[in-house]
Image (cartoon, one colour):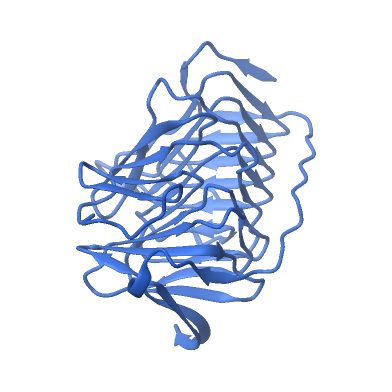
Length: 342
């Protein structure tokens, strides 16, 4: 079954649909490496192996350029090996950690990417990001993974991968993600099957997860999810793809972040196969997907209020599928905006 849509038509969909099969294949990942570039000068990132974080050895990233509540890192390559744990140091006053990759290669995240603190984490690589089967997020804030060219900070300036230099006085919260050029091969691929703890109903989960009430945002390029999970219980999961230069607004109150997609941007495709996206909780729980074509195969989307978790006055979040071309639902896909079960 295919749902054909007119330009920029919007859907709020709830229910159960079953259909056929689609095969998806990703390129094999390469060996990981983390290499600071020279764009931040004396404020360059410093990597300390063998640091004890949460009782386990990890590679800790210190340094960076601090501007008010924001901390900036810049790397020519940023990859994490299978089994490797990499954490950004989080000074107490820092609310946002922004990491750009300038060297022209995809980032392969095959192990654990974390923050040793409660800051939001941005990973910005215009050449693509792959989250492998054993990849995990260990953060206490929200997470943004994007192939954007850079991040805008109101009228103060930008933190760019296309023209990398030391950031100016960027002391306010990030306000937008901009694409001034598009690499057609730059995609966000998520294949994580790593344990992600238990959900609000006590069931075991897998995939990429942020803390309850936080946001998990992926902004491409094409976005492909295969046999994985994205989880932000009581928070937001948002996926969006751009296929031409444009700017996407970024909202946030320090706790949750969100995307604002202009009506005039050219969108890319989103494919979700044999996966689960969950945001359900006792209240809230939002899932939003913005794309040109959206292909959902053997996948479950659970938002809103979980079964038996609600309370008087609780407000369920929406599941929003916003495409400019087609939505295809196949192979017993479930889109449930009221009673999440996984």
